[in-house]
Length: 461
Image 1: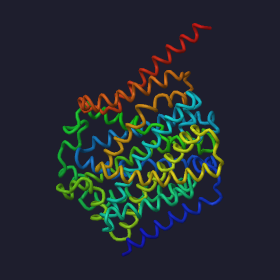
Image 2: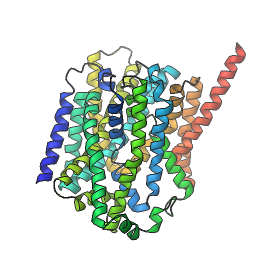
Image 3: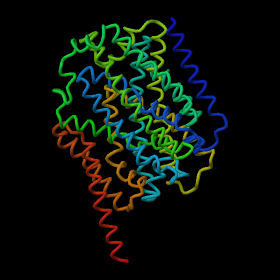
Image 4: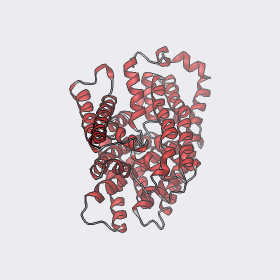
């Protein structure tokens, strides 16, 4: 009963804070990037809460249960990505004072068509990642509270959709800060209790197959491991919600510092969530791997502490879902609807459409989640809607590279073709994900076309 009281109280606080934060919001810019005055610690908390979703926690525990610590090391590709963004891209944010989306950046480099294309892929990517969180939410409510997954999804997603729709980015940031501190305490606590219950890490090492501590492992060859590492390195680089976080800081220095802290924090955090999978494997080798983290929390923690940790797990899912919902709504209205309309929308109309889109994407994500069961597999599938097409030309603009429209067009064609041919026709040879191939195809085509067009332009002068 105590656990239920704690969870209900927590969900109520998150909902009320989120709804309250929407007071006075009048424009799409406020909905998308709030008031652009957050310091480095807030950026650190909201970024961390956003990326530590169901895939990087429950999904990580599942994969480590199945394949071992090789999945933790692969996830550090994401950590490296955060550090690289903090080092090379975040310091340049003062160059884009009026941007509120990835599409705005693309428009500066390649024009209106690029903005619309970016908006299209933004919506699909964000819906897919929200779908991963939806699936995790149904699992959490079912395992911990005995609620049918559908009802768990409706309750959890209903809360997220409500406050993210009413409060926009301000609600997302405020609730992310709350959620970050709960999950940053809760999951390490679950791991510590689990290790103590088993009699120390030596007991885990003795019980778990030796191959689970190998990198690469029997389950993941060298080529497949490198592919997975690169998938996590490239897959979420400069995705819409993270780009929006780059716009909300007081200045570029705060943004860079917050992003760097988030990248460093992710390294031990991924190790913690993965190690929970090893605890679950030691407790019950016949357990359904998808239930690894919930099983540990339910089994090793005392009442009260268990309620706080369950709230932390719910936080993981909610904090990621709200960010990608906001990213989808912003991408749809700012990058697709506005550029394609002949007559401009009023500020009130833009805001209303963004809120409606926020709700619609939540429903779409539920459908997406039903199609693919593994949470982490949903993330990898969703990445294919972004990195091979958008990442290279977007990064080029951020880094101040001289670009051309022709380079953008040939790059996206090459990237999309690379993914489709490698994954669809060739069936991912050597276990290498088509996303990686697509990104490199885009990079080669983009670079060569840019160089040719710029050389021709110079020759004509």
